[in-house]
Length: 79
Image (cartoon, rainbow, N blue to C red; front, side):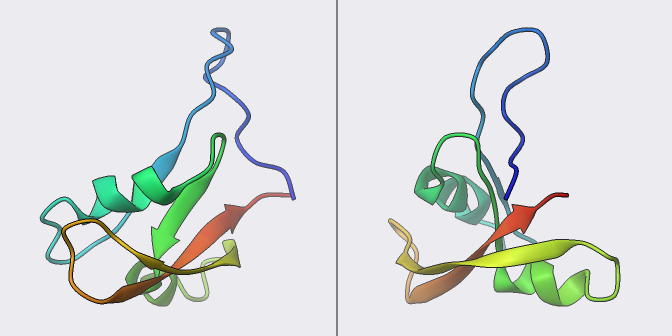
């Protein structure tokens, strides 16, 4: 698995969280669950982009601070 290593030219590791729907800080909470150099998305995102050619790996089920329930998260896989 390769991740997006750093912001080009700056050497700063990044982490990204993506969600769609009723957001209310969910994308930020997903990002907070990510390791450095990871892009995480919610199950909603994987369902919406089905057939796009994007690949995802399971990141497990997480509790997101301030958000009810358990969230199944996925990491974006790159070639």
